[in-house]
Image (cartoon, rainbow, N blue to C red):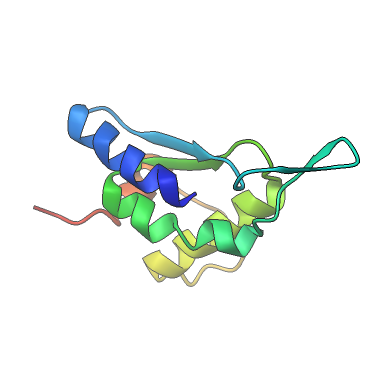
Length: 106
């Protein structure tokens, strides 16, 4: 995931459009012919603040991620926003606005 932070920064610098980052859960190792990813959801979510600072508008997961990774990202965003809503509470507004409010203002 760490490598996506610099990619995100370059993408953000090159456009005024939203930047969507869908990082892998690290690099896989092959075990008995199956790809195994060692990154945990919490390790993955640790990079959320850096991705937002680099300009990410949307953050998701790709290879090796599971719904637990998306949940960890959501928990990290909730913590960053200081959001006291309990898990599963009704959400209002777009994800773009929710994440956009975390971006540093010029």
